[in-house]
Amino acid sequence: MKIYNTLSGKKDDLKPIHGKKINLFVCGPTVYDYSHIGHARTYVIFDAFVKYLRQIGYDVFYLQNITDIDDKIIARAREKGVTPKDLAIAFEIEYLKDMKTLGINSISKYARATNYIKQIISQIQRLEEKGYAYKIEGDGIYYNIEKFKNYGKLAGRTALGAEDAVTRIDYSKDKKNRGDFCIWKFNETSDESEPSWPAPFGAGRPGWHIEDTAITEKFFGAQYDIHGGARDLIFPHHEAEISLMEAISGKRPMAKYWMHTGFLTVSNQKMGKSLGNFITIGDLLKRCPANFLRFFIVKNLWSSPVDYSESAMIEVKSAADKIEEFLRKIKNAKAVTKNLKLAKTFEKSFYAELADDFNTPKAFAVMFEFIGKTNILLEQNLISKKEAQEIYKLFQNINKIFGIINFEKVNKAIPAEVKKLAKLRELHRKNKEWQKADEARAQIEKKGFTVEDTKDGSTLKSL
Ligand code: AMP
Image (cartoon, rainbow, N blue to C red; front, side, top):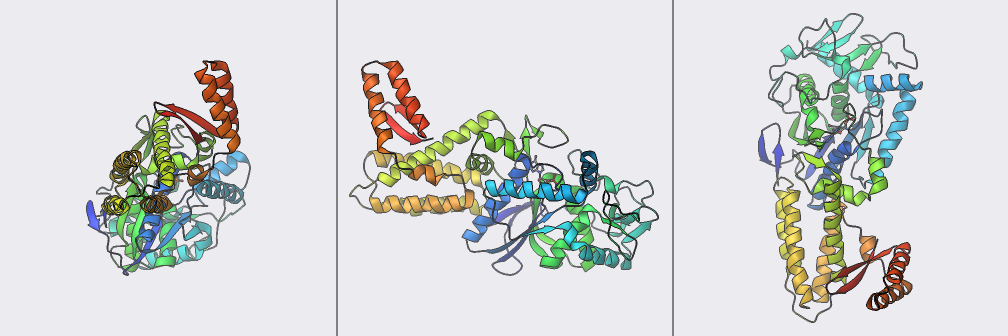
């Protein structure tokens, strides 16, 4: 397959370091607040991507960190009058709950930063030995970007941009270079409100960037296949990770492929906590089922921005309804006719689009074209039971990657009493007893179904 790689600036053939084994790391959340649907965008994309890779035969180890020590956590804990540790644990639980409701279950290992302090200290010592790190008394240990020749090779720049994710810990007036970043912040007077760990170079806490390199080195070694995250992390976070790890190991590249998801935006502005334009995952899922949010996310190209709006969600609902309606019809197909091998042809073109940079919009366009054509064949009674079973099974497999179809709804049998109510409603409509017809509809809806009137008559559907 081919994948767009930020490091090379083009689509590259995916050639893992160890054959069919892929080591993938994605930057996890900083747990100081609820996650919003912008976070969901990045995590749903990688969940679907990993499930796809596994389905086509790769053995993927998907590692994600959890940043549970950070200035933002310390500040928020102070505001709330709780310890940073308790705050981080509470929001980690919320994050994992959100991931579960979104069907994100492909992660092999979640690694909490504070469980890897030993590895972080070891990396700092090696950087000091090699002359990449320097100490500012009473402040912290900083990484000297000037010592790393290729600083800027991922982002193509060394200056901060407007949408870059930053951390306050890096600000110091005594730094050697403007872009130097803190890898260890001193704090000798540890109390519960500002955690600190003992270290040979002085007690303190780790900086953001080095948490990730310590974790990836522990699980993957100095080099691995894919590193992911959203675009705001390219600079300085990922640039810093490269310079840290490559300076320590002397091996290049740290990660072969860099995948950066586009932002989820609202009115074309990045959804974020600081802008206050966010919708938490929990709030959105009160209004729509998780499979709709997944569908909204995966039907757009992973690397492009995607604008959230109510009308976009209505479109998603109607697209999901279309697939479910199609599958209901497929389940009932039993014509005595020859196998047209439709499933095989569709499977080939659908997966070919995924193999080309995981191009989901093109893959779903292929799907809807297939549904349109097959619907005509269904109407002409040209789909055999065996063919229908193959098609149904293929949609189940596709759904294992994307989680966009509610098969429970597709398979929900319509109870006899609901069918009776629908007949009664038809009768009332014929007699122009509109109020009675409406009452029958309301009773049908109370039982979890709805009636849709088309030119060919009325059909019952699960709500
Ligand atoms: P944070 O908890 O802010 O460190 O973010 C966790 C992950 O979500 C990172 O990979 C971010 O880049 C990503 N992220 C945050 N906001 C958005 C957004 N609006 N769209 C897409 N990804 C985002």
